[in-house]
Image (tube, rainbow, N blue to C red; front, top):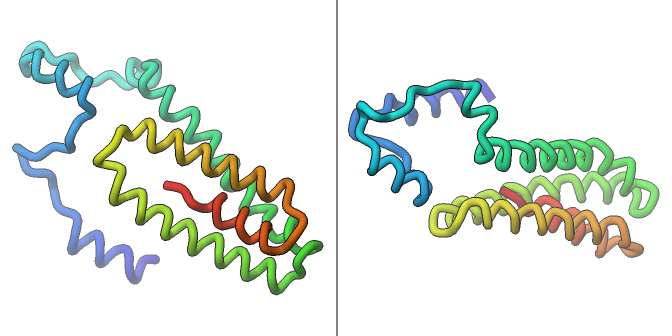
Length: 153
């Protein structure tokens, strides 16, 4: 990671220019345009942590991350009795590949649509993958469940 990530960080990342900013959400943009810089509220961590916008994003992602870690932790133990150790190892590789492809695909469309809707759909797809895994009786359905479960942002 250090051999690849650090050179990429050094070569690609740069300080933000004064006139550069991320595109804001549409409802936030309207409130920012209405307020002048002198009227802008100063940054307060406590107000951010208590805001509904922050909580409505962070709680679902925390739950989703907990489910993701739990799934990967138990994936080998869950699949090995049904499809064998070698096939379970292949399913872990397949799951990782599907996760990478899913993230790449979502990264191309996330800026065109509502981020909260994309995230909600992402969580629904993950739930469907877990449902397939819970009800699967054949190796092909187990592989399908692993791929669908991993297809996320």
